[in-house]
Image (cartoon, rainbow, N blue to C red):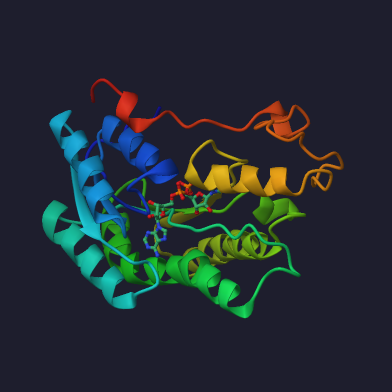
Amino acid sequence: MNRLDGKIAFVSGAACGIGAATVRLMVEAGAKVAIGDLLDERGRETARSLKEAGGQSVYVHLDVTSADDWGAAIAATVAHFGGLDILVNNAGIFLAKDLEESTKADWERLYGVDLTGVILGTQTALPALRERGAASPQGSAIINLSSMVGLVGSALAPLYSLTKGGITAFTKSMALEFARKRYRIRVNSIHPGIIDDEMGDQAIAARTRNEGQGQHGVGPRAGERCPSHWPLGHCYRHRPWHRFPSIG
Ligand SMILES: NC(=O)c1ccc[n+]([C@@H]2O[C@H](COP(=O)([O-])OP(=O)(O)OC[C@H]3O[C@@H](n4cnc5c(N)ncnc54)[C@H](O)[C@@H]3O)[C@@H](O)[C@H]2O)c1
């Protein structure tokens, strides 16, 4: 893995799941990382365990739908660590409903976190990322968590797929805008398949509930968590952060 020595990162939604595993790997690679989440107890525990293992991590409360929270979280990160090189827009929620089941309120809650949260995070972190990017040979970076369904669609979760497709297009647009403005900020998206964590459990439950209507033509058998016809035949397991023995 590439080293991140001296880099300062902010990861939203990192109290648990993919975000917590990402923070653990970044800290192991030498970065100082701020964790922003709604789950204060779990977020503090994640930061505390990293510090106890010799890493540098801090927790800040963040609801990604709030511009005020973003302002306070990025300001606290810059004050604590001295700048910002990397933003990971990871926080997201899932909606395990098809179009006919979904309500306007479902959609508003979903896009508030999955789309508005990414826009606000990008806008708020931009001045700090620009400053460090201008002074660094590598520039700075934004990484957005999209999904496989943000590329190919979903037979079971169309509105979630819509938000993730939006993130895919927004990521490309930001890369183009920042290049046009000659900001030294790279922007990329990541597109995981189903990951074996809390959100992955919701996706698996939706698949099982819709047995016989799977998006690959054959539905999963009841009780079968990772049917062999799923992409690559399995869901993906991030390395649980608490199993890492040490940092270094
Ligand atoms: N798990 C999967 O199968 C999967 C697959 C593809 C993409 N993703 C994407 O990866 C990202 C991380 O997902 P995950 O699997 O770790 O999910 P998760 O549910 O395990 O964790 C999501 C985290 O986001 C936080 N969060 C939710 N709403 C928030 C808000 N308003 N403000 C701040 N934090 C908030 C939660 O508290 C939690 O810590 C998401 O964007 C998700 O869409 C997940």
